[in-house]
Image (cartoon, rainbow, N blue to C red):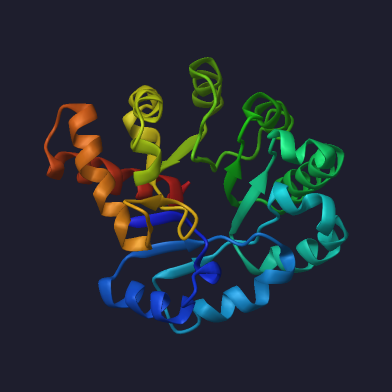
Length: 242
């Protein structure tokens, strides 16, 4: 199984977590929040083939860190993976909306020009605006919507655009999250934890906790755990092979 969205560098003990990832043979997409975090996070993956690092520019930090766009461009050729990027329409981040849009538009344009990038996209309270901007870059066909919380109409629009969705244990704790996940086509779903931020039972999720999602998916899809796991593994292969 692959955790397609994990903040490995932000665990209190990232080296110990990275070592355990290798011991358990869990695949991890280690996302970053700013281009300045890239170099240190890449070092966590050195000698650990189960870990891939994504170059990110989190919308929550766009207002204060937008001057790192040149650094983003410098590192982009070093990785196939980009995340966490996107927009956040929560009230506390609306003051940085113009900077968020500036950064996200720049990231999308750069990724389209570079080609063959897999994106992990944040869209909290901004799903329609994120999709509007993605629609301007049709060549970006490897977009995974991280912890999607939009409306069902927005979800259908994302599906029609060809988006994927990364789903974690925390997303399935509530009825609304489970309802949304039930609407995601089974062949468009991969797993994530969003650790260490996301929690379950008051404990930060770790990359190997993605396996807990499989039981919930089996229940939602009316299949066995083995059947759900087979679907997820096929999806992982399909997304990475695009």
